[in-house]
Length: 516
Ligand code: ME8
Image (cartoon, rainbow, N blue to C red; front, side, top):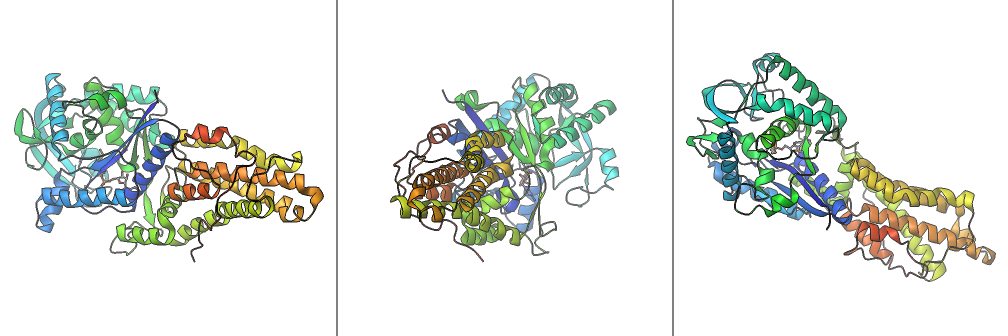
């Protein structure tokens, strides 16, 4: 049976339309999902929308519509955008759906029964933009403003149910320490560990998990005057979408624990402290990994509508028009090491796309044209070799499958994008050095030309296979120019045999028409 692989994006707030940040996380998740499917895994990829909480209520009020209407309108925008962008999610969960609400209520019921939830009173600070409770110390340090939005914190005083986070926090710390790859990258892991240690030393606060003054949410099953705190509601999506707490839990049995929750760095604490604590209290395993990527800025500044540098859907559609969906995928993944912050620069987008053309497109073009011209489009068998000259391209081609697998295993997506480009670059250098057009003029060099054509073809073949998760359309098109259909084949099958001697190439065509 194939190994299962369950990967998720955050579920996004549909209080507005998606923007570059949402698209980035979703495309990165899609790339990993595509790679794992190609590797032969049984993949489940989940995304969705997080529809409750005060932020949705306030935005709806400003717009003069109900939170339901706002959520439905924008959930559709998210769902349709993922279709338009060829995202291969298997499911899309809305937290307003009955399957989710029933699951959350079942989770709360279980936690009430195990005495992990109790009734108390909350008095303290709340960041309404982040939907986050803030301790007095943190609030004071931030001058009673949100560290994310800069807006004033709000004072809350109301009866509330609490989750016994203090009871489970030591176990969470132990889990984090015993599983070095649970939180990635390492720098983020260290931040969580030190914050946890400080809070454990100072005395861990239990977590307020219900709101009595809010109507828009999942009602507490034992006390419907309260709704469940939006983060408890939201985090549960990762298991309610698998049927946990509902009638049919076969997906849950098959896919839980998740292999990767991919998120932005600002929501790491929720995912690596609250979420495992809840799961442990439910007697369930924690996810295997939470990977926090960095934040996008645009042209050096925080993205904002008023600065005119906001990368919204319209802007992204324009990008797709000029560079194709694959151009956007490649740019966002190759821009910075995965996990660090990124800056959107229109000029870099252009450079990165043209790099694909100059390196990958160029190699494909050379291989198809030369093989067509000199060998009637059939891959020649290896002829005369020259170890000193051939070694570099042979080594890069041989090492490629393992290098690529290592990059994906570490979620080093920048490397995953660049390893194929580097292989193509090495093969271009090889062609420059061996000058096949000169070899072709000398009948005595025919056996040498055979080798150069063969090795160059193997390099572009592997590079294109390796690019399938990143450039699903272009890599497929490139492979068809090589006379290869990857349909239904696993990575191992595609890598295990080189293009055989006599293999006929297809029609050559410019793969990445230059954009100026
Ligand atoms: O936080 N750069 O939803 P959200 C990179 N509903 N990524 C960004 C980004 C930026 N500038 N802006 C947003 C929520 N993102 C909760 C999540 S999960 C159980 C609940 C991406 O709509 C990034 O993935 O505010 C970030 O974590 C997410 O969008 C936040 O989306």
